[in-house]
Length: 113
Image 1: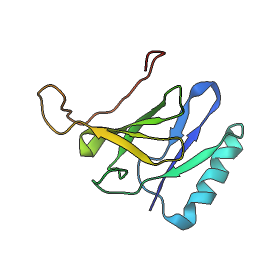
Image 2: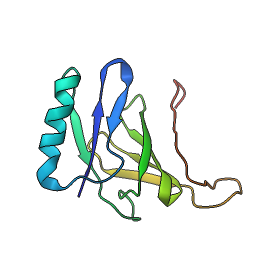
Image 3: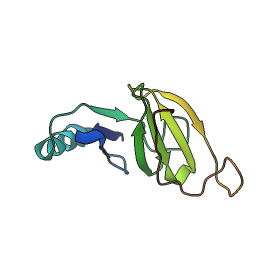
């Protein structure tokens, strides 16, 4: 099972927060294309808790290098992937102290990174 991330118009991004069966990935991308202008899609990760795996990703942002910054809600972390979906780094864990998250649902990037 994989996750699909698609860059839309005006910098918006669409992605599925639950994994899609491999045989449905192309059909999902095709149906998204009917409602949006054609933009590249990338298939990333799978369900799990290891690096590059997700448990209910809730938001994604792209930096100036096209890296994806993903809020990985149920793993209580943020992951950064390169433009091809390869894992670069993860940070955060469950908790209330500095550097920890409790169900992160958003990420953002500005011109400074």
